[in-house]
Length: 186
Image (spheres, one colour):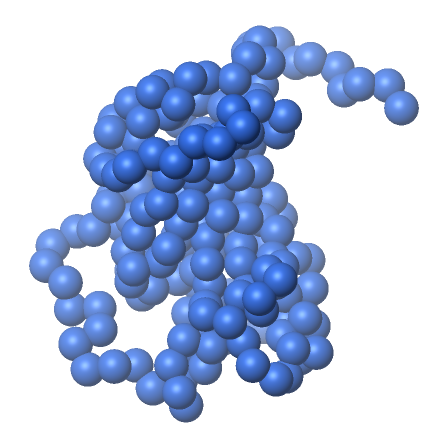
């Protein structure tokens, strides 16, 4: 299979240094926290608050063979009923282009967005993070039963002060993510 044609403005396929990604995160108003490195792969853990979903665990994985993987943990490990969950994740894979839904080996549902090296820059990292937060917000009602027993939101959940980093990302990238801001049609 021939390799895809480079488009005008494509950047060279060279992995940025982990320090560059940390700088981009700082530009986006995010604290990357400590970096973990192994076998030329670097990773950072973030927690992002959306408009509805709070404390969304997000891991950024900078891999020289892929680019950047933005990996969001939608819920803790699911018990029984995985068949229904798989159907739900497959439906979401169809409904949300540029996002991948799957289940980890220990049963945790995840959402991932991948950025190839040729597109990897500060703007695309911010766009991917905003996409993850918006999708998690949009799926909040459907994922509540995965997060809490009976889907009951704990008292005090979502009563933080001011605008969160996730909300600032949404505001910044909203013009490019309009499809995720429109009411769901189902």
